Image 1 (tube, rainbow, N blue to C red):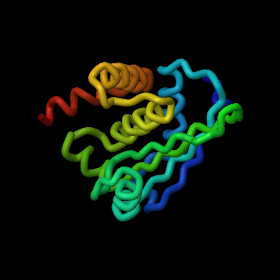
Image 2: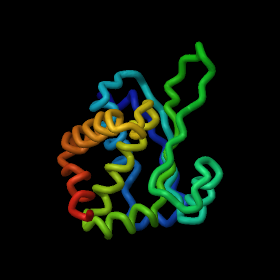
Image 3: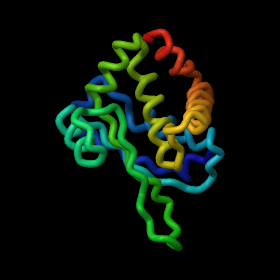
Length: 160
């Protein structure tokens, strides 16, 4: 995908030390779009937050009383309006770090997976039903493979 068609705004609400760069997030977004064969121009924001903000957002929008790894907020655009706006992702740094340690995978790999996962949600994918989950996982695996990264679900399987 031509890189001039993808605009990613990254906002770090936590210390940046050890976190992926904006360039990495952009590459991961592009990989998800490529796997989905999405060719339109897109613009999205990614906010990296701490546990307090992650918890507050998860409570407010999902009524879950804990921080979660990634939240996806698709853009709500009125019908008939053309815009490249895809939406926003919120990634909770402490949750991602804890999961990467538990799964014994590199932190950067987990960020890549969650970014791809979130972008696929912004594109309308879901994993509530088995068939939808299988389709979404296949796209995630394809996206990450294109980046030279392993299947993230193998790490989950090893944990269980």
